[in-house]
Image 1 (spheres, one colour):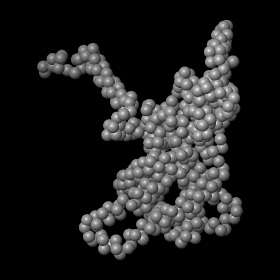
Image 2 (cartoon, rainbow, N blue to C red; image 1 turned 90 degrees about the vertical axis):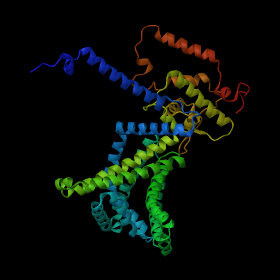
Image 3 (cartoon, rainbow, N blue to C red; image 1 turned 180 degrees about the vertical axis):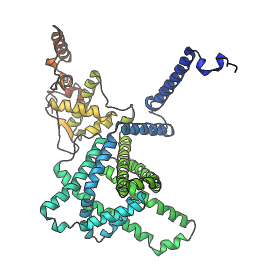
Image 4 (cartoon, one colour; image 1 turned 90 degrees about the horizontal axis):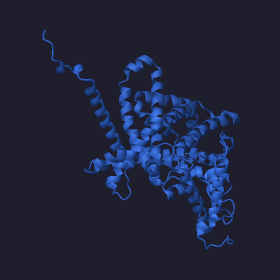
Length: 473
């Protein structure tokens, strides 16, 4: 057998050639990644027309949501909500059933559950029958005060966990107070089911009208009516999601953000529902393996998918309302010391200007939108200024900020000192750092020089100008 020439065998390539090929491949991938980075994240969209900035914003939003899913926080919230839903579903439906019985529309619970569990096919029918059976067996009147309190607490705990998940998505640190929870949750429990079932009843009544049947036989009205029949369930789901996005987070959500999130989530619900239904139909092997447990497993998977869709839609609404979060590649935005000092002086000056001109006080979200930056650094600076007793938060929801002391006596140096010294009460304080001789003296000289250079300049002088007068409020 004739031996192959050395150059014809891939293994006989010089090591340098193989290494250079791998190097060129890595270099090409690196260059491609750099080009995508410049295109998606570093491109300045200011002044670009909508047809150019829109696709880039969509890519940024998709990448940002993929990043959130990769971090795992959304999936953890979805799994937590699945567990709470399993505990709260029957009590929630029992309370809703008792309320809706007074309106005479309690019979609509079963069709609604069938619609929500439609992707499960015959298993959805079985689960609906079991849930309705459980609800019928719950006798609220014989539970007693303690039993009813536990029933109500189970429902409230679900709503509280949904609020916490949405607040996490919206970067809201403060939840509702106890009184607000009682008022808002009770409103949802009483008014929400009535509105949902009223919408279902109106849709069913319109569909049963003889005039609709007559018009359906006339083209092109028939095609329009059939299309409307397919769109109405989607619009109802999207409307329910939009209502949740606008109401549940403990912050002001703009209608545009809530509607965008609701529409995208409604579209995902329909598409993933179709895909999940196909999966259930072809899952005979899983049914053979898990036997009667297969129904419960599919139900839990669909609950998880549903909560994940809801949280993704909330993320979309957040990014629509806060596009500043789409300007970086994610993570908590950290500032240099110089940028932190500038932000502190800027925020203090804006609060002073509104205070002296008798305008409504600033909230953290309003400051973020005005400065076109994320609200994380704004919240950090506000916390530092509040800890230094330079500003104070009101009892409003969300809180707004006012001067804690007259700004005609608060100096610029005090604001800068509060910014520099903020967080020194932690585990590693300024005094616990063991430094060589002379370091503390240098730092003290620096602070003295700053104080001398600013020469008692007050916040009111920056806000209103040097001719504002120190004695006027």
